[in-house]
View 1 (tube, rainbow, N blue to C red):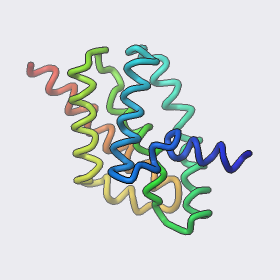
View 2: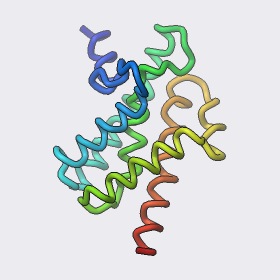
View 3: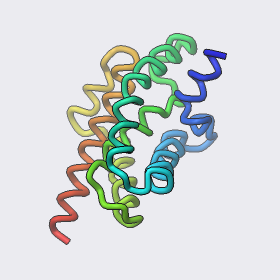
View 4: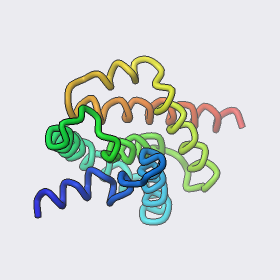
Length: 149
């Protein structure tokens, strides 16, 4: 039972098992949850982020150890949390959510400094923190774009 719960959480309710772009699938789940369940409520978003970050570090560490893979592609809770970081303070507007999604995926894939350096941290900490930083970059970019337009 414990193993099934950790896998369900760590894989973003199974989105990490997507045969194509599991990270994008996990990010999509995060956007859909934030848009349709949280309905733009920043308190729900922040509380979920604060709960899921430490749990995600633990789940990612456990799954990496079990699978004997330093950063398993099926672990997408890092994308979920990173995407939620990117949505902090973003108005409940599908265009802004889409912009945050695209920017988060860009920063997560390109990994500008120090995103790549954070990825090298051991275990779940590195798995999670590189995506948190990519989410932060996306957050700043979305808000700057919002100021300009």
